[in-house]
Amino acid sequence: MRDEMNGLEMPTILVVDDTATNLTLIHDLLKERYKIRLANSGEKALRALATAPLPDLVLLDVMMPDMDGYQVLERMKADPASAGVPVIFLTAKSEIEDEQRGIAAGAVDYITKPISPPILLVRVEKELMVTRARTMLQRQNAWLEEQVQARTREVVQMSDATIHAMASLAETRDNETGNHIRRTQHYVAALAGALKDHPRFSALLTPANIELLYKSAPLHDIGKVGVPDRILLKPGKLDEAEFKIMKQHADYGRDAVKAVEDYLGNSNGFLTFAREIAYGHHEKWDGSGYPQGLAGDAIPASARLMAVADVYDALISKRVYKPAFSHDEALALMTEGRGKHFDPDVFDAFIAIVDEFRSIAARYADHE
Image (cartoon, rainbow, N blue to C red; front, top):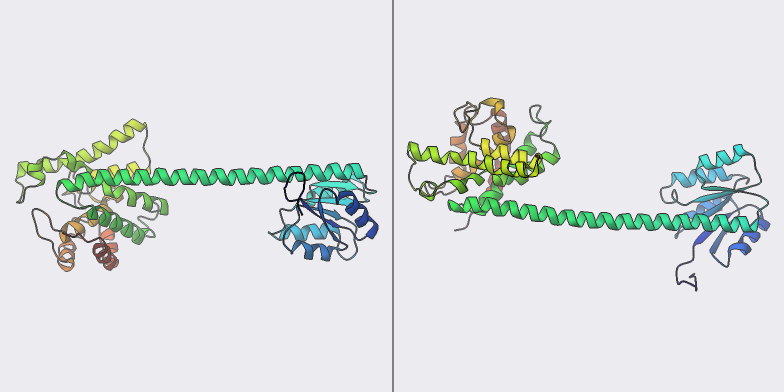
């Protein structure tokens, strides 16, 4: 039924009372403004509430045989489908304790009998206005939440694209491909997932941090943009002076991320991981790496994960200074570095999921 004045669907009111004269009275008072459904017992009221559509309001008698109004309301509140339907109690009881009990049970209002038509009309309209306002607010909030989520997705997509563009700039300078970026970030995420329950790593490797590691991993070699082409693209082995310059890409990477942190005036999980990885992924477990010569747990965990991912991918990939090794050859060479180059626990996690690494490498293989 529609309200012909405004074209809107007329609100539905369920009236529950065991007295026929009361049902008739309320029906006649409200029928011009609302769609009325009637029930003369608690059981019939619950059956009506189980039938779609739900009413917008329930006028519920308290004193009924078999099941009183308090019991009906309790059953309504226990059912998620009807729990949000507002209820106004109708009762001959007028003591303050009775009103308190009704409100405490979850009723929104309390009208005493004998029913005064003007009071009934005002109370019903007031509650329906509140319900309409609440519904509009919920819809507005839902719309706003959708807009926020949509905008957040756009910002995330833009930031991810920017990160990949920056990382690709560094990678392509030494003839590496964007697939190296994809492979290494998937390797890091896989390693983090394998270690998330390990006592040494569980506090760090939360789902949120694993996602941040995945996103920050592509920036591990961003510092290569500062290395001259004559060194970066040299086909043979670097001499000592050249290698000293090459090693500076770790400092350049750290400084690039630090510049962003300084510009923002603070850091966050993503930037912290990006800085740790860029600066520390060439450190070695035994302290023989660069740029700081850190050893053991002094090396950030994010950099220890990247060390395994980066070395594996470097070995299986063709570079200007070397051919690609097979998966088995790479595995044999890396095994020699357990406890020397690589954190033993991180390396053991790598061995446990080595088939996943092989699968990632195949999925994002370079195509010449």
